[in-house]
Image 1: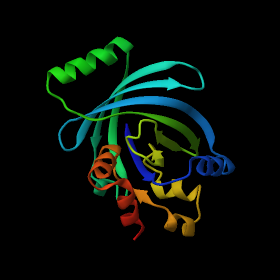
Image 2: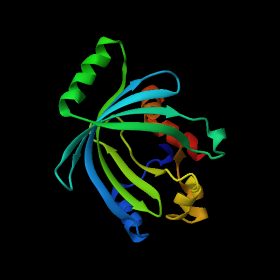
Image 3: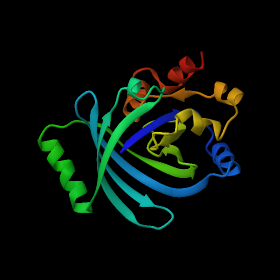
Length: 195
């Protein structure tokens, strides 16, 4: 399924959650995720995810192949990718890690995060807070799967045009943000986006 997304960086967790609720967003997920991402070629990756729902108490496992699509195909300034996911068992989750290691796939990311997801009019607003300091900032991911909707519409559901102009918005994926943080610091990157 094709997904378009951006990240609003350097947000305050409780402030953004209150704002989303005040705009009519409805909580749909509150979970702890363990994510392990393996880099494929330049455009693709494989992700293993263990999700513990804080709402239902259920634990689920998933394997996802993620392929990036050039922005120019959709004429939008956002990350666009094709995600293909399957549910797997706990045993398959751990077996896949061993297989990937044996065939030489390198982990690019391994970390846990608390994710709260809200939805409104076809958009998903996900507050991500990495528990293990993989990325020491909280960010809001805005995602849409409907090709008739544009990411800017998701921003405008929450903020005015003048407020949007003040946001720190990134089209980088999490692997790129972690690499940026390791190389020069995420705060330096955030400051460069404000200019």
